Picture 1: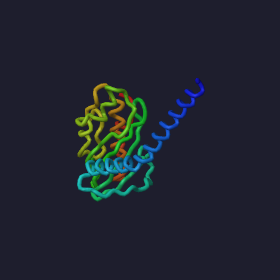
Picture 2: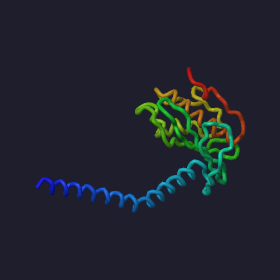
Picture 3: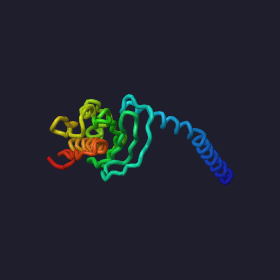
Picture 4: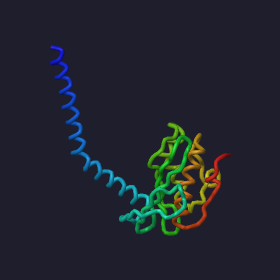
Amino acid sequence: MKVKELLVSAGSLLLAGLILVAAGNILAPTAAANAAAEQQETMETLLPGSTVFTQEADTGTDANITAVWKGEGGWIIETTVDGYAGPIRQWTGVDMDGQVTGLVVRDMEETFGLGRNALTDIGFLAQFVGTSGEAEVGNGVDAITGATVTSRAIARGVSSACGYVTGADVTTSATEWGG
């Protein structure tokens, strides 16, 4: 009797696993389409007036830059910089004149309640809009309370993005650790 119950349980688990795999395969195209639509919408928000984005190879020497997309009105630059608790991946919209048009943090592992607030703190992120990579924490940009390292890391990403578009050396104290 025990063997029969064990076989029925194992068969049920196997069937459940097969159903989950099949459902995942069926839903994968929908998930991919949703991700592509979300990416397009985010890019259009970061670079107003642009609707077509072409990913291009980064030929620069800035290790912070991890991806580049060209739009009609400028660029979307993905940077990955070291924050307090790990890498911070962000997208910065930069127009043809080197001005920041938008900024969004895409991924981070910062401390909850402190640095992680950069994901949703619109006031903090909006401080960079209209700058040309020269904005730095303590000089035109107010840090997120309790998250100075995170705030400086985001400023470094913005500086790298603007430097890519303008070719200028936008090194600021935002690229330095410490007080």
